[in-house]
Image (tube, rainbow, N blue to C red; front, side, top):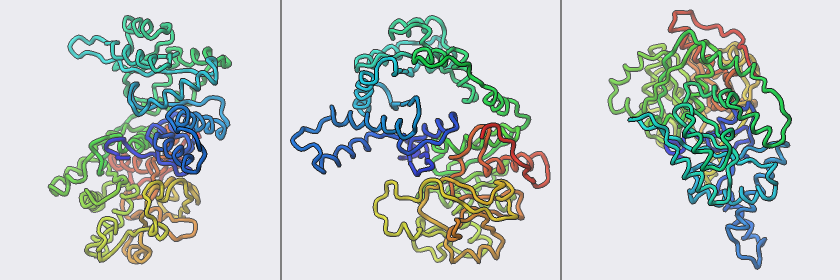
Length: 499
């Protein structure tokens, strides 16, 4: 998945690489989702073709209906069975009428017949644009998408209008009329400053009560106490910090969606609103003078990525943060490039690099992991998922995590070359986290600086509102403390709202 086209690739505990929406579900529901919750057209067609090659369908014509639709239904039911849940929420991405989704719509139509009307609920999210000139809300696009959905054979039970502001009465009546639903089945998802407000906005409109009644679920009042405490953290911020994200895919903010959210989680826990600026790393390669612009930020974050494009710009940005004592956090590629920058400019290892970027580098600071050297297939073959990390005592990392062993999600093929560990250590770089067997480095820091930390893992994937990931929390707190003139942070125990 191209991050500039699809946004970030979200990684699950069990090593699934999937659409960023699954990360949003994890953050909102505070649950851990399995990789099997992500069902793609490629998976479905691949499975059916594989079964056909094995001879499962001998004598049959393999067709979209019933073979593709049956596989879709089988996977959905398998997820429900393995997760042992009462309700399965299924999102069909894209737009009604897209050719890519037609087999899924047909499978849903069949599921509704097989499972019964009482046990199924169709929610249609439709765009309601507002004309700039008149501020009039237009329901016609929603009417057309609803009609297309009904033409496919699916009648929506609930319609959610996605609008820049709350839905007015007139367009609401039209949506209900042409969507063949009652007005109390039409709800609005308005544009808001804090996305975590949305559950309460829906509940105030009666969405939760309507769904419970429609599915014959017990009528219970929602307890929003903890969620309200989380919202109060986001809304009652006393300070603000400005953080620059220097990456390869900065043209699309969704390329770093989990990073953005983790920073906001950390900020809320510190009482600070985080203002983000995305900087394309190639900017610093084209014009090195632009590095001076980093001085106006309270912190710098260099996220993950692949390939050589823009990496020299990232290295320059890391160098600027290190030499100007600007709080810094590196993630995955940022972790490896921080090691490269230190090797070049502190250890004097001229030309040091990652072998992915420069296979002929005289000083291969980061190299392909041994188990990756024989890998030829690129799909799902990286070091993926939740892996234990040993945090070394008396380090910044140990203060942040308050644990000897942590479990974090990974997605990479390269590692810090063991041949350079001693050289880097002797010049002041501390690798404060490693694998349980000690064969791979996971966290680095420079103790003499105000805050300089980087992780091989993607810490952002486990961050939650009310329970920020500790590396991000520590980074934002350092940005704030340095801005308001506090001495180097001691990082007292974090108060977690929801575990």
